[in-house]
Length: 152
Length: 76
Image 1 (tube, rainbow over the protein chains, first blue to last red):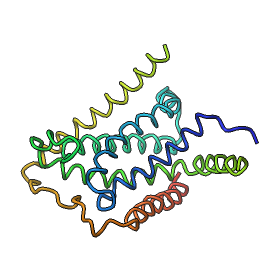
Image 2: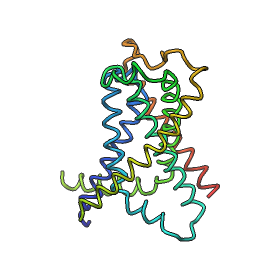
Image 3: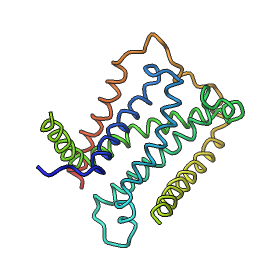
Image 4: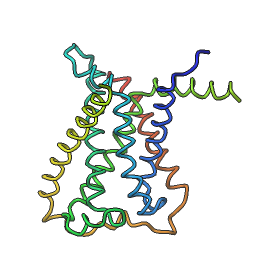
């Protein structure tokens, strides 16, 4: 079996980390508020790296071409997910009580409600994002895990 | 050259994100009079700290993915 490119390995482990981070961020009773806030800030860096590694797809889609309904749905789904994650992180910073408490003292209390609403949207859109990329995830997981088993 | 390209990409990502945040800001301003109560749903309860909540959340995301995959396969 040919070796897996480092970029693909990094991308697959980054995606696993993103999935676990989103699940952890939705379970505040499990993590506690302090870890929740730090994890939310770390998520920003993870998302930017994820987008950076997927840039060829993003820039490729933006060029003029006839698109299939599936790729259009995928594009708008990804855009919605990005919007939700961005707002969730920004509103999380604004309502932060431990990491950046300076903002929460002066911010609009409605940001709490916005944070809750977009967090729910993130869960649904992340699930649908998984659904759209299921085949890629399955194929990559098989490759990465096979390589690991071969090395052991 | 590569660094410039990376900087441009990250700037584009942050610029797009800030546009979405600006829209959310308008939304937050519009609901200000209605939603003034401090949120209590997210305050952690030490008694609830268990792995089951985390595993359940992972299950919810995977369940949405499995159902979504079936629906999207039929529709698209």
